[in-house]
Image (cartoon, rainbow, N blue to C red):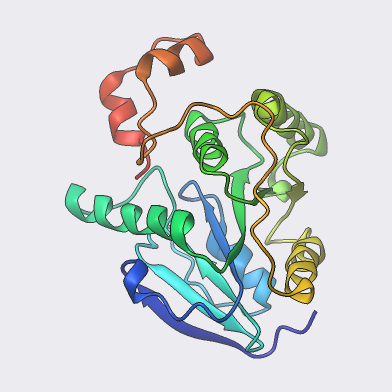
Length: 244
């Protein structure tokens, strides 16, 4: 798949400031510090296309990159942590939510999940939110080079088991590593297939038993989550961790 040239288009603070809707877009999002910027750089083959920062939550705007004048990579703010005032954090996460729900030329969401961790409640919340809004997405488990194949496989299997009742069939799953380049060809193939197919009506991820509607931003009831996790929760921590 030809990726030249890759050109930075703009950083948008909200949906109104996004570029025109003439090109298909592929959005990347995940928990802060999941390795999103590194993966975008690997996909584009440009070391510093997206800035990699040691500070979680560095991306605060919706960043657009035009690829070969045919489609766009979209770098969305990570969820779960961000530096800045509560007002600022709320603003940029609301912008990302609006983009995901309302952007008509958004073809696929690449949800990034850390393969080195057991299923995290915040990632499960986000999957539930995507499912409740019928958004098309695939799951990409990152940083596979940092764990043993057995541990990575166990974490992915555990995640699949947690969401199995929501989908039939399950969304596609990919493994990737920005360090080794694993998964680059497969992810670009997903994009290439959609781009080659041309404009089409949205095909939402199949859902067999849709989870309850989640009011943005992911206002899941504490009681429901406690029953799912079977562990006590600190309400103050839950409020701080809740994305968007």
